[in-house]
Amino acid sequence: MFSLLQTKLGRFRILAFLEGLSFLTILFITMPLKYLYQNPEPNKIVGLIHGLLFLLYLVELFQIKVELEWKTKKTLLAALASVVPFGTFIAEKYLYLKSDAEEPVETKK
Image (tube, rainbow, N blue to C red; front, side):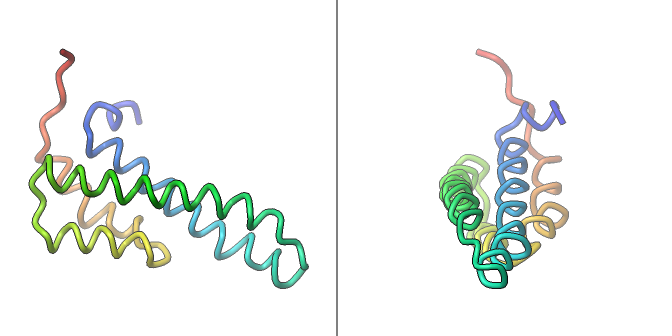
C-alpha cells in the first residue's frame, strides 16, 4: 500500500478506488435507504463525499494525462470508468496497473 504513495499514478489509483467505492455505496446502500426506507440523510452525506472525490478524480486524471502523456483514448476511458458502476475497479486492471509499471518512482527533492 505504501508503495502506491511513491508515484503520482499510485496516488491516483488510491483516489480512483475511493471514488469507485463511494459510487457503489451510493448505488447499493444510501439510495435504497433513501427510496425504500425514506431516510435521505446518509445519501446527502455520502453524496457530498462522492461529489468531492469525483471532482478530485477528474482533476487528477487531467494532471496524469499531461504529466504521463496519456493518449486521449486512454484518458477518456479512465473518465468513463468513473461514471460506470465498478468502472474504476476494471480500469485498475486494464489502465492503471499497466501505466504504473511504466512510471518511474519519484525522487525526493
